[in-house]
Length: 139
Length: 139
DNA sequence: ATGGATGCAAATATTTTGCATTTTG
DNA sequence: CAAAATGCAAAATATTTGCATCCAT
Image (cartoon, rainbow over all chains, first blue to last red; front, top):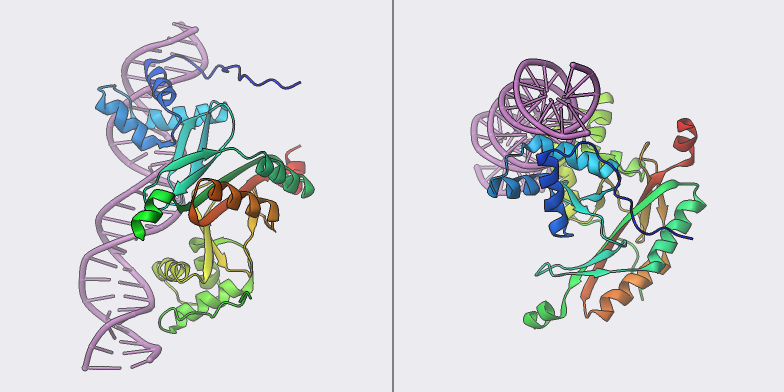
């Protein structure tokens, strides 16, 4: 028996700022940095401090409400949890991104981690290549 | 026919600093940050600037002589290339790193990419967790 | 000698923290 | 009201860059 819905844990008080940040995260499932999120909120006229954005994202991450990862540049990016873990197939030229799901990989990483006695396992996998469109443009 | 040895490309001038950095990288295959490497060199009495360490690591990375990745903390870490493509199982607490090889994953990424018509495919996969030692220290 | 390499200091960039003030429950 | 949340400013980190000097080729 597996419970698949996440019970939307309490993450503190419902302040205006927190609600706005959460609402923004709900809009898309794309990864965005704290700075980007803050800029969007400011652009919309919402009065939210950058510090609050950072602190809220941290709280939400700890509560398991959002996912986070690091870009190769070192920036930390966040997105709302999408129903189901997946990876990305990214075009090196045009950045087109395709979401892919892989039971195979999930199982393999679990196995490898378990074999070495690791717990609290997570993983990141990104596939980079050139998409058909960009490949044909090249010749 | 597959060539497995890397031809040790030229990476500029053989300055004392560069030689010392490269020699240090050769000592182990563990991932270390620029700051760590710099501290070790300084500790040994080698006169090398942090800036030079950063610049040398960047040059070596571009030349394909060393591998680099980001820790969840955001720090960039480097290590000499080991022969053969592999992935890492990394402890979130102590950063202990175990190299793992996975035909399964390699095959899966190839398949996924091919299915979408992608070419020139590469991928990155890192597994994060808590190693047995750190887990027991926690209780 | 000459262009690449170095190193200091200063600039960036990102994220965190101290603390006084505001707000939610 | 009390505890939690906010926001500013400043600190802490990590990395990069300007520029004068140095040195390997």
